Image (tube, rainbow, N blue to C red; front, side, top):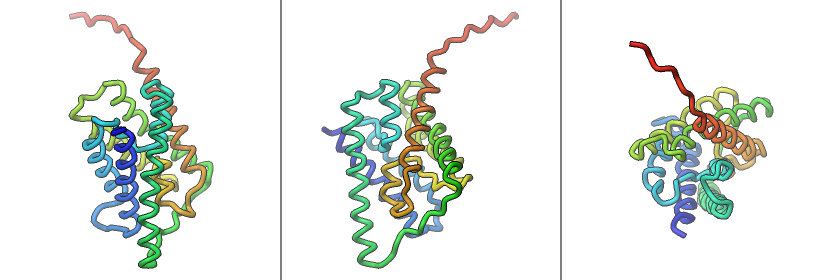
Amino acid sequence: MNKYISEGFGTFLLSFVVGTAVLFKTSFLPVPIIATLALFLIVSYFGHVSGAMVNPALTIAAWTIKKISWQDALVYILSQFVGASFSVFVFHVYIQTYGKAFPVASMGSPSIVFIAECVGSILFGLGVAAVLFGRVEKNRTASVVSLSLLVGIAFASMFGSAGILNPAVAFSILGTSFTWIYAVAPIVGAIIGMNIFKLISEVTIDLPEAKV
């Protein structure tokens, strides 16, 4: 039960922090940096409990590489959306009380945005897969995961995407700007990224011995 609560609460924290940064348009730090730092802390806090995926796309992708059972994957996803929904409720109360609303996210060509979100999620998924396959030292897990998110967001944002790479967080903060692209593209990208890493990590190359 602890791992499901961890996923729900972690997703709430990520959605709330990122949503607050978007809502108030903070000039202290750009939103992608705030998202990266938030994920770094969440993985540090809850990584030992549930893996701190806090992202339905990563959860589905982890299931495709057999790093999580389908039963856990379903409850993880449910927990993640419950957590994101709590942040929606908090923001709704604030918006109704103070009359401040999220800015409408600008969006380029749907096909380009889909590709951008997908490729960004591939980059993110590769980093997470490196952790899941034990290729990263435990004390570097949070750094690798959060930096992979930053690289993925940076790539996606260059092509007119909101660069969220997380269906639950996108659901919580995009409002009327939320489209199927922000739900499907991260899932497709994360699946591709993790399965590419799995394929590569299982390939052994025998290099010739160097002659002295």
